Amino acid sequence: MKKLVFLALVLSLFIVDTSDARKKKKKYEVIDVTNGGSITGTIKAASKVDDPVMKIETKKPDEVEFCGTEFQSNMYIISPDLGVKNVVVALLKVKQGKAMPEKDYVINNLKCQFEPLVGLAFKGNNFVIKNSDALFHNTNLGIQLKGGKKRAVYNLALPNLNQVLKKKIKTKGVHSIKCDAHPWMRAYVYSSDSPYAALTDDSGKFEITDIPAGTYKVLIWHEGFGEVKQEITVEAGQATTLDHTFSK
Amino acid sequence: MRVFKILALFMAIALLLISSPDFISAQDEDAEYDDAAYEALLEKGKEYYNARCEACHGADGDGKGFVDIIRVSEKNGRVLEIYPRDFTVGVYKFRSTATGCLPDDKDLMGTVKRGITKSLMPPQDNISSEETEAVVEYVKSFSERYEEEDPCDQISVADPPVWVASEKSIEKGKKIYKDMKCWECHGDLGKGDGPKSNDITDDWGKRLLPFNFVTGELKRGSTAENVYMTFTAGLDGTGMPSYQDTLNEEDRWHLVSYTLKLMGLTESDKKTASH
Image (cartoon, rainbow over all chains, first blue to last red; front, side, top):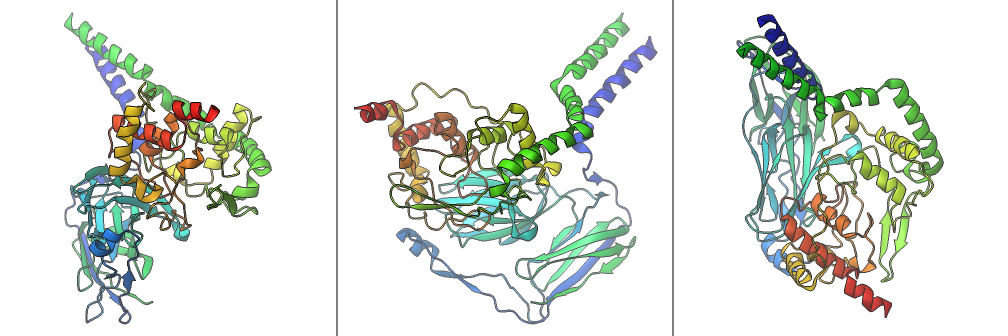
């Protein structure tokens, strides 16, 4: 009789397993990473690039005053020794490694701009979308596809001050964000399906740590310079250097 | 005795799981993706597509058929520039699913059958349901998105409350139209001429004009349910956002009332029109 009970137990577990298996097949697996390697480096520009000033054009009188008439785009934030800020460096198709960060990603509509301009989000957390202006904003977020195309992920209405919406981060890759009511507003968020992604700092430096040894494909992306992909081999306990110089 | 109870419990759980919709749909889906049958369906869909759809939507489904841009004039002189849908991206306006979701197959089949008013997308009156399924399956095959994602659940829509289009509800809807800033794009009187109306582009970078309610014809069909679904799901790929998280259901129905009023489709409008 005990054998029968055991059989029924095994059988029922098996059924639960098969019905879920389809949905979970590609999921990132968390393992203990001991003696992992790291990637550090600097992303530079071949030469200084002028940061464009962008124009604000609106027909609503209250917005002319509140939003201003132009703004520094901050597309090219380049240090004196040519380090480039806001470059995404991310390992692609990582199957296993350390735990995913548990951190929501805040997209703030503030003074007719998105804040932050560029950032990193991690799948499974939430986008927290906030309107800090007493103006209608909509947050229209989409994945950037090949050939300059875009695929909508969320287009949400935030008509009033202090409205906050929370939405699951369910897609990966470079996403662009626009507000259809204010065409000059723009932002980018890289959504990663592994914890191995970084953003360069003011001097163009980045660091990705606790990587299981192996060969990876890495994406280097910047709003203005575009993107490159290359392979990199990480050795256990070692720091691998990855530098890149963008030219326009 | 206790052992029997445990055994019975497990058997019951096992039976429940076997008969659960999830388990059945998993089996069905395997059946659906029987390669030979799927290929045959695609072949049939391709035949129909090439005969009836390719001229506008292109052989590769990228919306670049030889017909190119279609211009439609409204009575007030406003000219809409309409581009045939690019199926490669896998983004659709007329969905019964949340923003950012793939449409339900029924949505696509509905669009094929009904056509899209004011866009020169003709209704397919004589299409069989098998042909509809085939052409929808073929259209889906243009986008990689279908390999990466499953469609979301359909948003359930109850029958419109009895008070929809009543005077009181129209009044409430009018306030919501103002507070939700619908007028910024669609204009105070719903003519599609709000202060933002000339600044909007779609996800392909093409200029879009907001819906002019006064035309009385909503592209997806002018029923109360369709108006409700437009606010709720949003029109992905365009500037029209989803209000599913912004407005509660009741307020969305009040907004439907006001929209129907602007479109001249309430009972009292119809009576006036017939006199």
